[in-house]
Image (cartoon, rainbow, N blue to C red; front, side):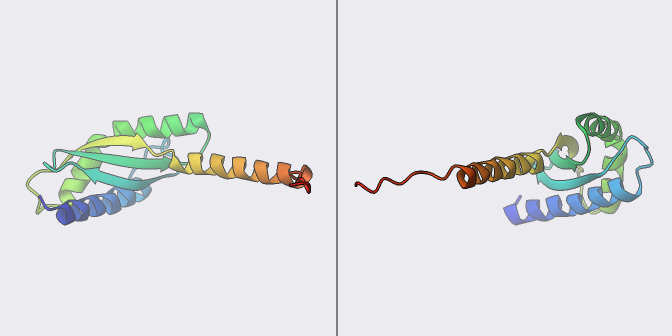
Length: 127
């Protein structure tokens, strides 16, 4: 399948799953979660669904467990919205921690900048 077509399928799935998670899942364990990316295999058998979850580690684990339990419902909703497709990929939900990582990197940079302001590097004039 052409790469552009795979990307269209992934983008459509991302939009559908994001809407369903936000508006249709009634499980109170599902906190604030958003679909950040979908990668579809070339044979359309599998889709990695990356989900960013806000909250404490416990809240994120609870949300992820609730979403894992809802995979069948999520796949069914994708199938209903994408009726033209012969196969609907099996969903593999993966927590996207890239936002946490970028926040950590920003904190490290801020800490380094602060340390440089407090203790500026010495420049030897004798060179």
